[in-house]
Length: 353
Image (cartoon, rainbow, N blue to C red; front, side, top):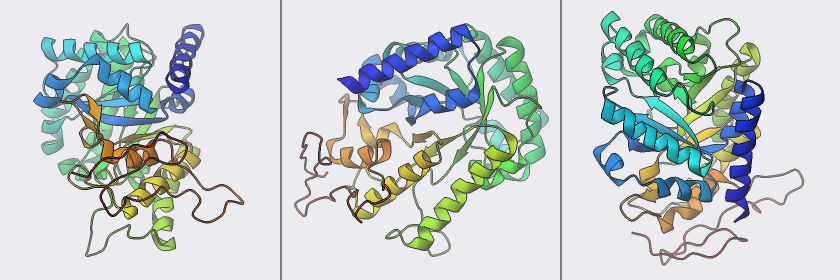
């Protein structure tokens, strides 16, 4: 009961803080903590199954923000639905971030589609102009496709859209992502308005679908020293960019890989713990990809078999100086397919699907 209460108190204090003085990006990033990507406004199923009580379940699990992915035109019906989501987040003490897919622009970064992105956000900015300062705008959820070769177009869209939004809502928190599927190594290519450190943050990705095989090799097997060093190098690229520019950043999505059909493996559990611990050590907030992996919207409940994995991603047991090797490891699935939560939590057993 304490965790939900503490989260609500922190959110309330942030709102009071913002009312007394402008909320700054550095403080906002600290409030984000661990969150989750959600399809509550992106897919027909996500829209249909959404219930405000889902937000309560997320908050009780220890998630402090949600990245609400949305596609399509900003119609009245879509804006009304987004308002419902934002209000539910405010009610249960979860920070909402609206993330636009911008699919047409990704596939065709033409001047016309550049303008469409700007117009989409102008409509959304007007609609939410009086909302809590904790609501964030993620301008393009994952710049990819032809944007990988169109850094100039991407910077142009960001510049015009930032100016348009802040002309409507001067203190709104805005995230912009680099090209190459928001790779941290590409952060240096972003052009940021001078003096924008207070309201503009970077959004980047690392293993959005887990450590997938590339060039015949996996970037994570058993967690070798080389594998860990490669991941730390990517996180350090973001840290160095933050230090150089004075801007805060946020990982908009990472995943341990496909888990719905299979129980998490010891390798996935180790990867999840390592990633979460490294990001927490770097004081970089992050969103887990994605809600449908871990939460059954139709049943309105968390998937029991995946709770150890989710715990490792939200509140991992991280190594501390002087710890004995292996003390932090989560108990892997038992041979009979059952799972148990870490020591100190109530034991939950379930049969793997």
